[in-house]
Amino acid sequence: MTAPSAPAPTPHPDERQFLQALTNDPEQRVIVSVVSRLASWRRADRARPWVRRWGVPVFCLAVGSDAYTNPHNVGDPQLPIILAFCIPLLWRERRPMLVFALTTAVSVVALPAGVLTGAEFARVVALFNVGRHCTPRQLAAATGITLVQLVAWAYFFWRGRQLE
Image 1 (tube, rainbow, N blue to C red):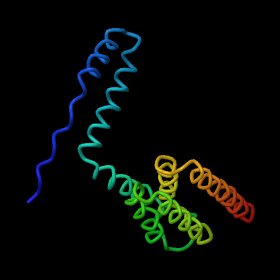
Image 2: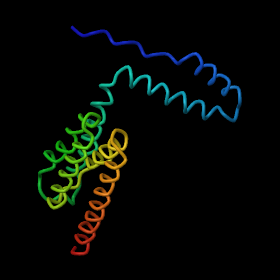
Image 3: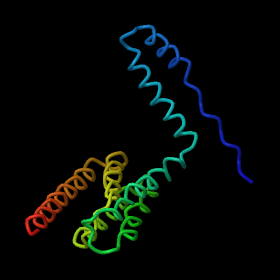
Image 4: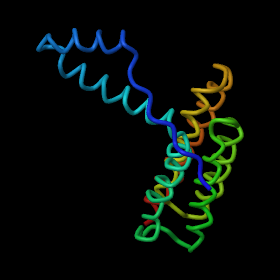
């Protein structure tokens, strides 16, 4: 038996009055429409947090599926690598540094294996969540690690292109 879902909360009356006042100004209509859309997404996210929790890893999985059409991929370890990028994202808000470390480790393994997938987008999501939920010191460390890894990836990729 499933529990009934809670209705999406309505905007606060003060928020409604503010948006109505801005809507009367023709120059502000675009801003009001963007703010209204973002507010409705936030209300929907709060009403159904499982959509974002599961949606982001599923999106990364879908983006990573391009690995099978990429002619530069050498072996066939794509599916385990794609899953290793995507599955930790389920815990990205509870354990952001652990998720960042896992996606970084998968990226280190995937590079010499010669597997390029779109699932590397999971590293961006993991770094974003470090920025949202961790201290500035942890964010600086994660950003530094990412920068070093990007330089190494560029060198590895460029060297591979030079050899062809």
